[in-house]
Image (tube, rainbow, N blue to C red):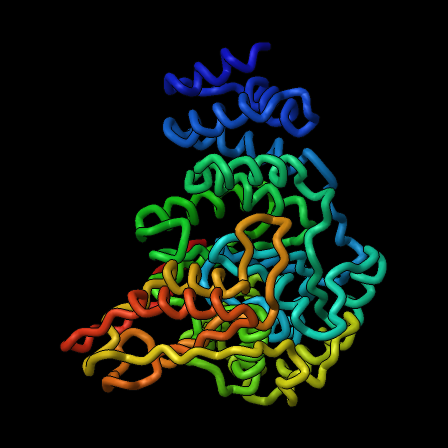
Length: 434
């Protein structure tokens, strides 16, 4: 079989067979197919797309390219949650403990951030002592004992995706429905959970810029998950502006703690309760999503979710004292205030621009191997619909590099648009897909 013939076939809009897709995926994973041919193949897929069957086939091949995790040693229905990536999205730190309190075992394997999207593992590593790597037996023992463990992804799950994604990232082929679907679902299906909840972001700070594309992605992923025997649901949520106010690793952990104390921003609280409620339903600890949401609210109100977060941190070697003393977290040496130059209302807060500004403080990485400044980032003081007086602080920008911090502050200014009329606040939860 000839790779050039397969590339040409897809370039011309042809439908590929399982054998042809296998030749490309396994050849590249095993090192017999060169980068330039896989790059050409990905570009052909980017422009011509894949149909439903091709996408299912690609996902299955990537899933089976490495280990399939066996979580059978963990009691109960394991529910995994995945976000398609956004700015200020720290929901795993909140919904995991809530779901665990309500009896849903949370055995979570998370990734690192890349570009302007943050990674859960980076956030957790800003907690002093927290270990994001555990032996498989210790991982399962903690979930059975505490109800929750959150670690980094192993290098043996869907290695085809790891290698292909690295190439997509440098060849401009990330934003394609089939490639995004196969990347996400191959890892989720290989990770051993019994049910999957997908948070599909929609807006300027997301891969899917509009609701129609987000719906197509969500529906396809739900179909693939259910076809694989995993009960799967998706919720489409807004990413026109950052979620919550904090963007940056240690800063987001502190905001997650605030939510667990019922003191966090309303949007991240609302979404966290919804996601947790859906996880509780998928874990069969509620007869409906609505009942799950009520249980999630109760776990926040009585403080049990906060205590579960402390137990998670303590169980993985971290200092649970961070919940009472934020000074134990990494601290930046610099803070620049970005102030409003006019009076009016915040018309928009561009999520992508804010995410890039945070990345440029040092809080994010451009390449997978880049180190991050765990203390850097920014905190918004105003969001869409808020009233503003000239001179009000719009945002605090934190960093340890003076030039990076200054440049990031300059980037924040055009990201926050102010106008004379008060706009409607964006709808946070747009659609639930079962």
